[in-house]
Image (cartoon, rainbow, N blue to C red; front, side, top):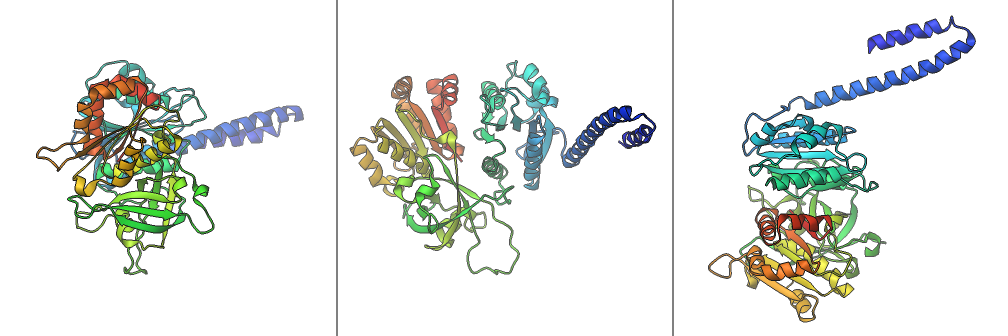
Length: 484
């Protein structure tokens, strides 16, 4: 770069000895050269910054273990690489062994010796892979490779203005699953750098690493809602206490000003309990996410929240704040995040809803939407521990069944018989009818715990319908999950 600057200086001096017309032409050329020099310096500076950021991370893992993970990126403009670095830093700070590398360097042997990979990938043009993923696409994704040992997740970066939104990420996800790799959690789509979606990715990184208390990468733009109701729904339960939480919008605002749909998420900004030293320096608390269980027509925003505990016995950040520390009438930091990948299908198709525990929250909002629209062919599978204590919203659900808003209902209470019975068992038993509903155009929505329920349900449905059918339904918006 110093040589370029010296050359430009000598050219400027030489230009004074040229005739005036030539000086003007030369000046124009000099401007162009200066601009190119600026671009080169910027590129060099960006490369130096990335190289500095990569310091502290290896380019590959020496061996696979439960605390090691590879972060692989496919980036055209550098944004995916920046998120990859943030991701790697988050996991490393949580005590994990992390490697970070471009997809250009991933070979079959890399995949064979790695047990967990996080893919952070952009899509360019009309559905193309970035340049640094071209070789991976051509050489690896054209092959059949046994990846049954691999667990993965995909963060898809794109722009909905393009018709083929996140198309490369979808192709990658499809290929990995067909090589029998296992998804750690569902693919997250990021539209034009959406910070809410990136916080959702960070939420999963916390679950993956076991460290869920790291500060958010970006603070949500909260509004101050008012906590108005808190009701314990399962007194005497063998499980953790579950509360129905209700909030209303700030003063001088109405629920209509904060319209949401079934499937959308409430991002909550927790606070510390009263009575601590308010003058002490306390770290910012990360947001917590909850499925919204009500509709704007209800006049309030409702959640189902189970109390969680840390290893030392203290209440969890979000559940402790909502179920114990915050007072009725107090302001709650809350932001509604659109979750279009879990919205109710727009047309009147049959709907199969599957969930467990507090996952009933998201399913309840869908049932409310369907009932209000007169779409009555709804089939609910719900699982919990004991019918006597854990049948949340019992009266409402049974009333929907009586009046036809739920046409089929299968309840699985795992502790009410000698052998444990879960929703996947009911699905297996009802396989013929499920196939018949799907043949008639049914959609399937799943909400609840990722570990256990969601994995077992997905495998059961794959066995009943076939993986290709499930993926085809997902592409058509007929197979949607909100799992955590």
